[in-house]
Image (cartoon, rainbow, N blue to C red; front, side, top):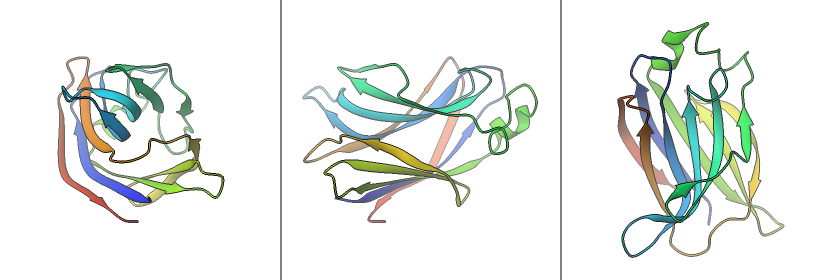
Length: 147
């Protein structure tokens, strides 16, 4: 069904690294993500972008969605403080009439995009967080709810 994932996240200073929030993920018996997606707040991709990657067999795939509207997300070298500021992020997943799912992403209560449609997983799904490239990230206030 429909659900929303909310979290507060903050990335440390630097020019690379980032963090991600898994959604619509299925895990195997070892706890590894066997399929699903991750929204990445990725300072190292391009000049800094939000990207969505599929995740299969505990490995990320190539981006299937990229968001880099500079009126919303500044380049990492132009405004590095924006990238290290605390962000409230909300992912809202809804089922469509066509049997697919749609993702809307909000940052600090502002809609960032709502045009990512995907073939979701059935049954019990999970969320989680990750960081990479030696960047420290803090997460707090995780909430999963009906939208």
